[in-house]
Length: 189
Image (cartoon, rainbow, N blue to C red; front, side, top):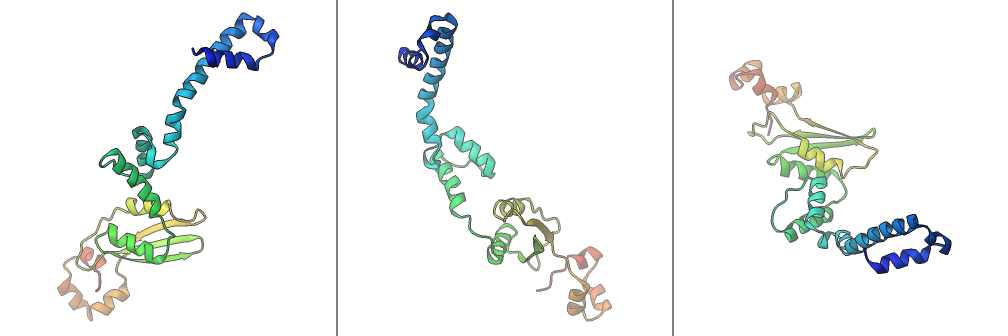
């Protein structure tokens, strides 16, 4: 225990309390806690800022933001900072860009109405993306969307109108598509 912390703690108490041995023990214990806090104060101040945070604090940020821990500690700090620098308002254009980046050039339609943000992902023609995992897109949109909107992400499927416009007859459809799954996943150009 630091004598300075103990003496400082004694100065805060009324003189008659210092006559009790229990108070001496309590002040000694409190002095040790104050010493620990003073020793850790510098580290706490460094952890308060992204560019000076410790490795443990950086791991916490990476876990919260779901960022991979790649590179040196400084690289990882910059990745956390970069995450916040690139958060921009969600627009139809920014959502379409995210979809294209995450799903190999896929297109998207975006509708924001009735307190709902609906994103329909339409894979690129010729790209067989039957089982799309939307968890990455969902994670990126959830942290950026306004909290009053619900988020719904769906995969686009061909409609009867799309089939009619691209296949002039049922025979033409049968000749070009071997199975129903192929028709369902057909993506017009």
